[in-house]
Length: 123
Image (cartoon, rainbow, N blue to C red; front, side, top):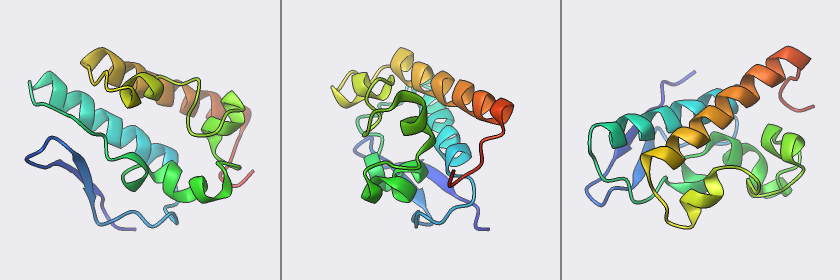
């Protein structure tokens, strides 16, 4: 499995190398890694203007073209496009440390919940 590295370009947009394909074995873990990176950047005082959207979200790469069906966030919220999650504030251009931490904590709590109930990718 490739090692993914998130980066911040000169415009404050998050990117990832290598490019996500949608076939990553643990997309939720990669999404957590992305938001950990964003939180770290903001804590260091860096400007993050864009999170990269579906291009840097392993969950979106895996499930977005299917209307989010199968996505663990969709299964939890029953909403597509991450509605009812902290990312909504980020998408409204409230790109703050508090919102980034809220998204990170949401994803970590979701991972813990899914581990507790024995959820596996594709269910």
